Image (cartoon, rainbow, N blue to C red; front, side):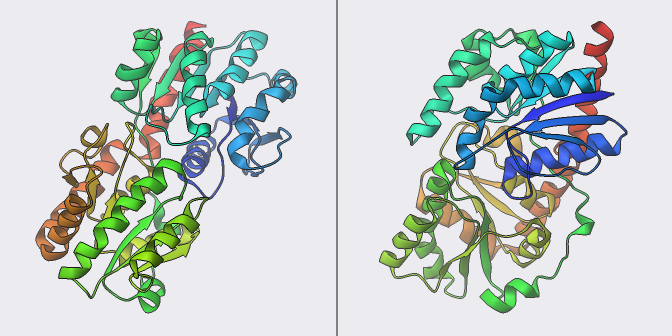
Length: 373
């Protein structure tokens, strides 16, 4: 099948970027022809790439892409796709709807996250934009990651129930190509590690802040442990200042960005991986990556947490440093529980949250829409 794919997220760093990359690679692997329109300067092997002009910070590229929709229309006109999929937000969805109209083909829109709990002008603007535009965009199907997104936002906003498909987030479980050498991590930071792999932006950084506030309670009972944060972003400097004020620079360490090839090594070196959410979506690709590798996780109970993890992680109260600390301490002290949760998490990801499962579902949707059209 020939697929025209418009996305504002694509790359090797960042949860959404890696998710999109792996999804597209799986489509190509299965023999589909792809033409990709994106502001992200990322060359995807065996796909026809068209890059819209972009400037400034990547967070603003999605607002710039619609200015160049004529480029997308021209690319689609030459490619002659069977279907168009847009990905990430309503602005890319608008581009997809223009391709749909011009080419007279079905349109699938994938929206990863919607949250009304926003902490800056950028995320507040995106929420209001989604609320205003999503019900007006011309699509045949809209895919969201969780039932909560469907029931709390899309249906009340006026999106027809029959057009909504819930396909959960997914990761590439074929991680054999990544190196697994935990000594790279343990030689630098020690053998007793609590870790986080997450971009330090907006609500994600706020979630990490609660973990930082929890760690003194953990260190009180387990002084041999350190908390290492892998990832960077705008809020990294503020979090570092917070740690300095706490006098814990030697116990809470910011490693900075890490390449995907190192994820296995970090996971293998990790005793416990806490995930603190502060918004309704309550899911992250970081959590999926840890679970896929069988790492025992502590997650906060807000939004879609239980919908996603079930009984494969230790679920604790949200926005509560003591509850987070108690969860981490419990897992540090209970080796059998760690093994049990790690095994369940790995099995759950394989069953429900692999990229292969996602593409299976997408292919079913594509086939039905193309036949119908």
